[in-house]
Image (cartoon, rainbow, N blue to C red; front, top):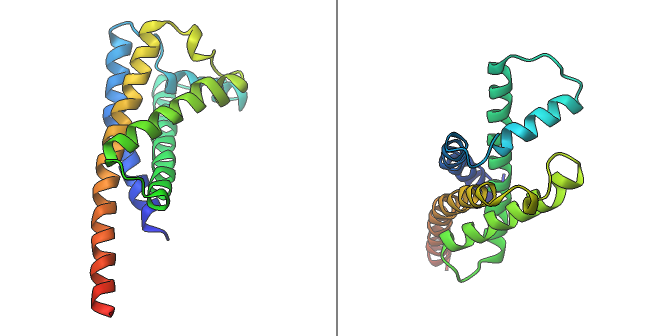
Length: 164
């Protein structure tokens, strides 16, 4: 398996923790209403025909789907970062990537599937909170995945020097 996928997936799972904390804080402050992962999970459960779930089951499904998505997008980030090798710090790359994921999700596939309204109609507090959560995710993702990528590149160069 490609180490960049594994490293990115692990970094994505870790980055989902502070991202979720930002969202839950914004929800408690009344800036977001229901946090997006809850809203998306409830719509997916309805779509799947699941009608009766407990609060605990909904929360478990929400966190499971949110972390799965965070790991998946993190794995894709790791794969892309390794191939593109941009001359930009990992944190900056991660933030840019996370904002692209935000735009593609909340202005793209999520409203296209009828799950949530486009970002522009959610209100300023919701948009600011959600963008902030994605910036936090991207910064952590880029920092962790970037550090591992630098170690892998150094090891690859060292192995090449030994073999020459």
